[in-house]
Length: 505
Ligand code: GAP
Image (cartoon, rainbow, N blue to C red; front, side, top):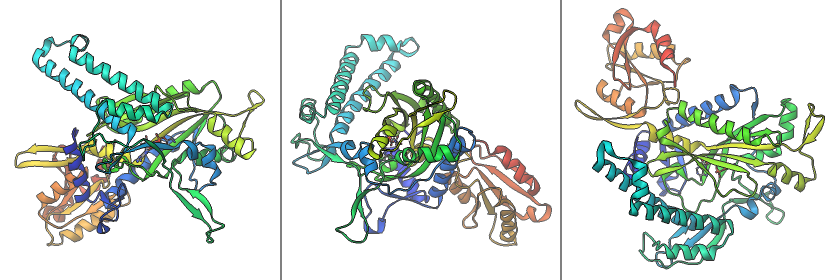
């Protein structure tokens, strides 16, 4: 697991070199916070989507799918609260003219103190060895206690000022804790202003008659406004969920950390409709379910944690983030929110149409409550890469390997003729044709076999099949495993069953 910003740089350059992710519009010098997925990236992304869809929709009787449009009636975004409240607090440094999110610069300050505390604990652990009692050390170290106090006080003030939209006090907090602009090194800050994150555009060909549209900032509202149509046509009974995967757009002010925060990204969201009063047990259920999902994909507990929200949005009665340990620290990967009946009721108010469910068991109508799970596909992609990227010492140097879970790997098998002559390419293509309807296969004949193995390791291909002169005599091939680098000789007829058996998560 990579653990610092150097490692993020390595992952970014690995993505570019191996056709996973390219900066968007690169030959025009790029477009910030927009990225393109290359031949290997698009396969990995599709595999993550399929894996999510399979576990959230296909393997469940109580969740169905939807694909709603990106453009929706503009009033939807008034009802959802996005027109009035989907804002970030902005602050500029007058000397460097650089713009920042005021909440993020305070959070970065807090992260730095957290890192200091961690360092202090690690140092003590080293010093005391087996006798180290972490809890006692934390309680008795003055320096750690002072820093923890600073962290708690700053967090409390930040949350309060954000909730009250008290930007004057937030600016004062930034000044008091001594945050300086990393570019100019000064604390010459402007006042904080609100900035709406939605992109807008116009519909219609005549400018005057055109009406304003928004590019959706979340896919969830498409689910809410289709709630009754889906429930009736799919004959769903509460509790049930509607899932959707699609693009969302946010005019993020600070777009950093590669594909972690983008302006155009994809979300995989599911709204689970429940009887009012039962939402908390479903919230706990989805917390556990989603954590299990991350565990099965190879994220161990040491790279995952829940961050329960203390300050809830006005429509939520519980919320938590599943955080992943990215190279730049634990950050939100997925949100699980108990959104009450806020969205459905608000759409009812704005349309004068009932969005209620008739519960035949109690012979009555009600507006369901909603528990939402929402994960960014691109962020999940980055987490999968961070969790898989390894540099391993081997006898002739270092090999870079992506230990991707086989089910997510862009290509499961690389088909490699040992040399580009003696009929080996023809025989290899015959094998490729035999395997291609069962597995995504990659054919490659350029370079030495050693170099091709290294390249496939770096691409994350779990199995290589090498065709040599013996293959022509007895229809056997070499099967090489990415993780162990072990090689076995097996007959072509056994390939499908052998690889299928190994194609677990
Ligand atoms: N419907 C709820 C919702 O959209 P959110 O916490 O704003 O909640 C959910 O977003 C998830 O979408 C996040 O946990 C993150 O994975 C992803 N996400 C949000 N903004 C993003 C961005 N600018 N770039 C990439 N992913 C983003």
